[in-house]
Image (cartoon, rainbow, N blue to C red):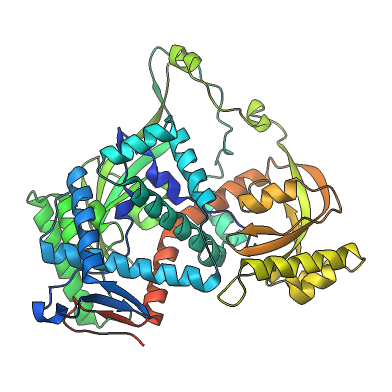
Length: 492
């Protein structure tokens, strides 16, 4: 559904406390290879790189490098030599500049209120007050203002992902059928686990969880066979180095082209089935601490390390009694039988923002359209003429929507409408909307829920590679003059 789906996963989850350590957003990364440092005389102009019309100065690069080095040291990730670290950090800064420019082009802005809401959410997830979270950040060596800036950047990246990546991922009914067949058509609906049974000690529950790190050696598109062979040899040499006892995080920081290089290659923890099939097959029998072989994908050659794997643990009854779980949806109280869900039949008109059409113009356009609808003009006819969504040809008709099927801002506004009512202009990551509710109904979703979950899991598997492909497209379309690259190559 163009322009409305919620994110498959949010970057804010990466900021949660784990084992008492707050993951640093400073290390949010771009993806490009490290290179040898260019001669010092190239730097007399004080410019590290030019990205279209944006200049990254050597002072900015040095400041960021100092911050990243400190964060790596705090996380006990071996820091590569100065030349490699500067190149890795500059590649991140180039990717950041490209994403900032794209956000500006389409009018995406992150408000102070959104940052404050994210801070509050992170604090609550970690059972902290905002003041306690601030102390944790300051204790890690990061300035609070800098943390907020980095958080703002990650929220922006999430909005870009929603707008440009997730909606382009096509998951067909055949894809879902094949996935369900591969799972034996036994996927349990979310939040439908049976009640915990009394046990003297915690017991495993839920899906298997795996935390992976990777080293990626990229292979350029349309590379000659000789280049592919050279890159494979490079990956195999790194694997031999790791098997000889080299620190994986240090090798990743120095040699990986992956977006998590300066995080020691750590890609996070997720259910095993949510990792790409290629990764799942490669680590099927690999224990925690073990390495995969060299894996080839469309991006290049990967080496994986299983950092952790296991199952979530259900607490013993006394611990469970002391906990205060969140309210459960009604469906969870009925693990068998009908699962009744309220669906909403809605239409919308979408006006996208860009350099020409800012928030005020988009909102003003919709306010004018809303007045015309109040004076008797057809919502559907105006949607056909003015909406910039794929649903325009159908008069903005979105069909029957299930809870959670649209982004939160859209769903919250839609849920506040009566049948036949038209909303005020509503802002989402995709632009500004007018929403009209046609009608509502209750439907038994017992059979459809497995398909909805399968679609979600397929999206989870595909979103990472799709996002990296999108970043590659931004790089290929931009002029980039990397002054640390002695080839000084730009792409017009």
